Image 1 (cartoon, rainbow, N blue to C red):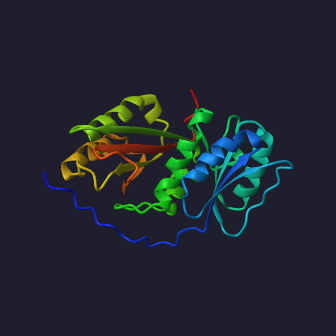
Image 2 (tube, rainbow, N blue to C red):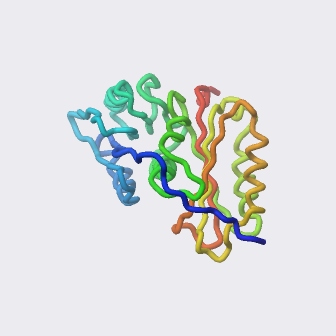
Length: 245
């Protein structure tokens, strides 16, 4: 099996100078510390204490608002960013959807660090099939709700198995509510089992089976944190009615 030839390509757009992750109150400290540990360029992660005042700057392109409590304060801060034209994402219960471009659909607090990583990683790391902030904006702007699903598998059928697990979680009623999907494939490019062209069939088949009404974009990334023979498939799906039912 021939190795898949994926050529590194330099980013042709200007990387935004500021992606912010803001935790509202001390209850979010552990989440914010985990985000800091990712050490992503162009990302700031802070815990906001009372009086919970924060305003957007000219450099801000995206803000992720995280709250466990203090939800009214979170919504108020989010509204300020949203009205300033900053892509505004909410990780909290009881989000006021008028204050956000998109808020997470049914996730626990323990999932928040992984969800933040899923949003940030594609736009702050170099892909072999590229995805940039404009693509993320297209997926999340005025989407109201988003969800993330991710599967990691190893072995000869790793791609098919990972995608199969994701497919099984996307019921027909859920698919009917999805409007946009970004799909990210992560692999270890120096691993013992390199990514090969034949494996991509499972991905292209999955995309071809999605309803034609869904806008789809996908990208491929090397990731040294993945074990040698593993691949990870992650989807970021959005839709205004995702929380209904």
